[in-house]
Image: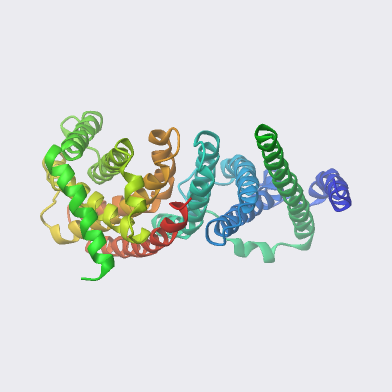
Length: 219
Length: 227
C-alpha cells in the first residue's frame, strides 16, 4: 500500500465518522422532516454511480481502440463500483420516494435510466463471471454501448413521464444543507477513488500471478 | 458496386441460400412469435376484451423475443459449422461482415413481423391498416435498432460460454429505448383515434437511436472481433 493510499484511507474514514454529526446538524426540511436526510447519502452515491459508469466507459474505449490490455483492470474495477454505488442509490432512492411521493417506485426518466444503467453493469459482471475467455473485449463493448444508451433512455422516459426533482435544486440549497452535502460528496469521492485503486491493483496482481504460473509451467 | 457492397451482398446471399434450403430459423422463429402472442392473449384478454394499450406491448415483446431467438440461431449455425473463422479469415472488411449479417437478420425479422402485425390486429382488434404507413415505419425503425445492437452482441458472444443466456441479459437493458419508443408510438396509433403526431415523435427518436447504434456497432465490430 502506497503512502498516498494510507492518507486517503485515513481521511475517508475520518470523514465518514464525522458525516453523521454534520447531517444531524442540518436543518429539517419543511415537508419531509427527518426522512429527507437520506438525500445526503443518496445524491453522492448517485454521483459516484455515474462517475463509475463513465470511468468504465472511458477505460473500455482505451481497451478496444487504443489497445491497452491493462485498461481491462480499470473496467472491471469501475464496473463493480457502478454495481455497488448503483445498488446503494437504488435502495436509498425508494426510501426517500416513499415519503415524498407516497410510492416506492415510479417510472420516471432518472429512475428508469439509473435502473437500466445498473442492469447493464450487472450484466457486465455476469458476463465477466460466466463468459469465459475473450469476455474482456465483449464486456468493453457492452460498457461502451451502455454509455451511449443512457441519453436515449433518459429522453424516452422524460417524454413519457417525469417526477424526479431536477439537479438544478443543488446550487439553491441553503448553506446549512449545502455544507453537509458537499462534505458527503467529498467523502464518497474519496471512497470511490480508494476502492477503484484497490480493485484495479488486485487485478494487476492477479494477472502477474497468472503470468508467473504460466512461466513456471513452461519451465 | 463497391467492394463493401459486394461483400455485404455475398454474405446476405450466403445466409439466404442456407436459410431457404432448410427454412429452419424462419419457421421456428415464426411459430415461436405466434406462440408468444397467444400466451399473452390468454393472460391479458379479459371477458373477451383486451386491456387498454396491451396490443402494442405484446407486439413489441413478441418482436424482441423472436428476434433474440433468430439472432442466437443465426450465429449458432456459424459456430456449429465453424464457418465464422472462415468468414473472419476472408479478405473482407469487418464492418462489411457485420452489415451482411445485420441485413440477413433484418430480413428474417421482417418476414416474422409480416405475420405478427396482422395477427395482433386480428386478435386484439387493433387498427393496423388505418395508419399502416406510419406503423410500418415504426416497426422497421424499431427492428433496425434492436437488430443493430443484437447482431453485434450475438457475434461477440459466439466464443463465450453460456452465450444463450448472456445474449438476452445484455441485449434487453440495452434496447429499452427501442421498447419504450416502439410501444408508446404503436400504442398512439392503436388508439380509437390514432395520434400520428405522437407516433412521429417516437419514430424520430427511434431513427436517432438507429443512426447512433449502427455507427457505433460498425465502429466496434472490428476491435471486438479481432484477437
